Amino acid sequence: MEIKFTARHFKASPELQQEAIDNARNFEKFYDGIISVEIILAEESSRENLKTAEYIVYVQDHTIVAKETQEDYYKAIHEASGKVVRQLRKLKTKATKDLHQSLELEPEPDSTSEMM
Figure (cartoon, rainbow, N blue to C red):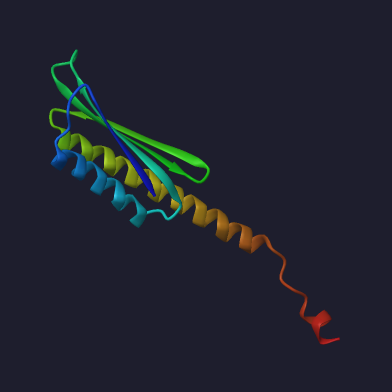
């Protein structure tokens, strides 16, 4: 899984960058097919000095986006990564459900034709 980190309008500390990357690496626990993750941290200068964390997760046929604005980067990272985890769980549940339904629709092999 490829991880790309961007800090907009400020210089991110190594600890902050590592925290965001560690949260992104945890996404693989919830879904196996992640191709890449983009992490964008930005400082909103126009709105009371708020901090924004955004994760863009590219999965096989889907793109998951989660964005959170808080007073602190660590809070924003935690909330945004939680949103991604919820979406990944939902995607995995749907994929598993669809797989089980497609397996149920397949006709069973005819046992009488095998005996002949």
